[in-house]
Image (cartoon, rainbow, N blue to C red; front, side, top):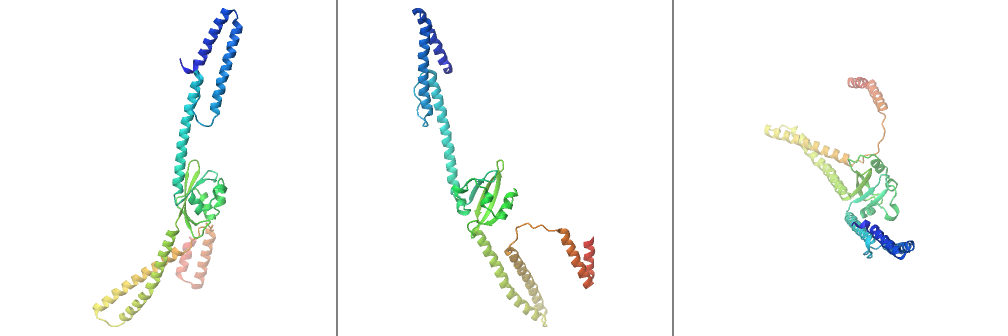
Length: 310
């Protein structure tokens, strides 16, 4: 006999017993009514005991109740215990993840589909200035207000990282990486690259200083070589002097390239997009070239005008 039907079979047997006793005593309906009332009070008492145990927040052993009530409480207890064990495992996993992410030196920020902050690690508090009790649920665009970051965030194409100063410390340079996941959520990772930037600046300074320092001895060497080449010299010496002059010119070209590279690297490139009227720019170039052709009357200027007109 299956446990869900025990209470039904028990009731049927009890009613059958009450009917037999009632017929024997000649009081069929009174005996049947009395038995049903006693059975109802007994079931209500079992229900109250079961409800008290179910309302208890702590998982304890269920009371030892007879029949289907005992089976019901045992199944509820087994389900609760399994659910609590699963919740404990998930809680331990989340706690472990938070501990490991807190140990990271990089900022890790989770942003939902409405650009609101969901979670971040302790490095984000140190480098971005996020406050746990204040900034949770706020828009990331209200906290990081740099126009370059806002444009980078909204374009939704994050193939290249973005380098900006920390919003709370200008001496710290951060490199931002954003990754899309889920249904439009974002994972923001910001890395402190201040040391790498300082090393890069040191390298640029060294290249620039070395290039400037090399120009002086090369100029002196080339001056002496030009002086010696103007003098009548034996053929072997003259041939050697010309090779020395060629190598000097080559070194001067390398120095010029290094200086140009240093200037390009040290130039602060504007990252803001500025619209340019191409047609107006071409008209101004054409006007300037025409003016140059009229004043100088050179064939090259006229040729350039014909090319631009075409």
